Length: 300
Image 1 (cartoon, rainbow, N blue to C red):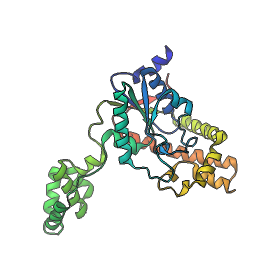
Image 2: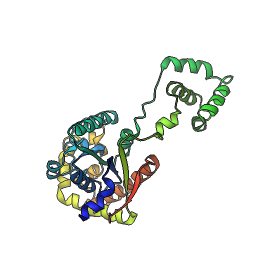
Image 3: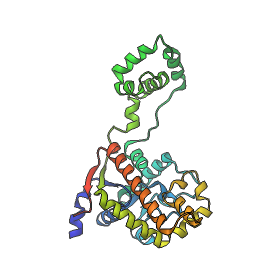
Image 4: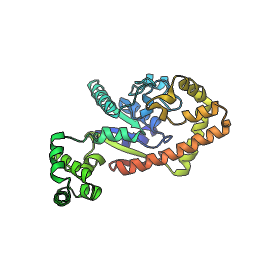
């Protein structure tokens, strides 16, 4: 079937991860993959975790969620903080549950920090206060700091270059090296091997085409009840939330509701901000996900 031919590269002895900027078609492609492979979808969108943020986060519809199980959406109330460590624990449990049912995990999303943490590991650096105290006593002085610089130049050249003459930072990097056997920059940048079994795909659009999609989708969302949704969520405390306030577009709608702009200005401001966000997303994915295979969109 034509549909199968278009998505056959995403099917195989691996679990696909569909990443890309907002409005790039991640959700619809993931649905096609899940239909063809008995898959279940894991969301990697930090704002889709929140109940009530539906239209503005382009959350899967109730009909889509009845057809294909979705995980890691609608798991937080608006006043709760989104925690990346907790997200990774939940994602790992969801993968185990899906595999236990004989299903196939299909991960999709555009929240780079969450995807990177799940695929490459959390940047939880080891620490030993007693060791750090000993290292500070030894090297936090003009006499012995050059000795540490020489050690790091030999054993951790990237850390030596990054932290230069900053004593405390270089001492901390040496502490991490002694505890883990790895350079701090290596652990923080996620340059190690990605999680086994997962294969990453990055959806790539021509910039002008993606901009057009973003403007069109913004208008569709506003016309489909996003303004009313935002009004409800703002009344429920969205803008005072520890993390949910970052959801794109909702604060702008609040300004519109207070009479500070026209409907057309609202659409344009949200769309422009979304285009800027999409550029930042692509920069992140290209820099932090070197293993992702580019997929030119739209699919042929």
